[in-house]
Image (cartoon, rainbow, N blue to C red; front, side, top):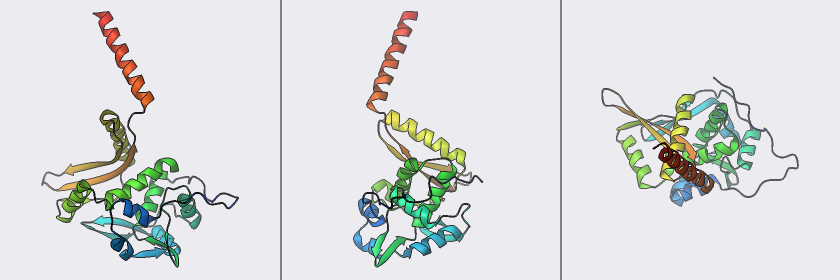
Length: 234
């Protein structure tokens, strides 16, 4: 197992905080989750979150989630959490007398660590973490259909502990698709069908942007050059 070299471990030395960032409740509201559902979600204190993250993984089981005992290969500390919140990689806590986090924040933190093990920077990881939350809670019809399939037992949805090679190929595919479709891509779903018909879906969060104007111009010039070269041969 690769061990990451965390990108920084403390807040800035001057003690200043960054600009206000969205809380996890703000993220859910953006994804269409109603206020009552958000209010009723079980929460953890920061100390509870760190302790749970370092000892347990949160994995999907059908249409629900469960904690399984699995020590984190590179434990996180309060400094890590504060840094990632400061950088906008993680949403900020909701203040209810004290800082509170949803139980599923365990999944987000462990995913950050996993992407660090793959060598990704915090700037790259931030959009991926946002995509994880969107894929789980979004009220978009496509996302709802996927979750309904899981609930009916049509698919098993696995957690994010995937081979590094598969994740890299997913990002290559997302980049290719974003360019030909000229639209950003935030998730790649890999469906594996066994000979008995059982389907397993791997949800891999990605962050692939469409072509920039500069890239489009270069692509057009390259196509024109290729066409002229072909005509010259004829």
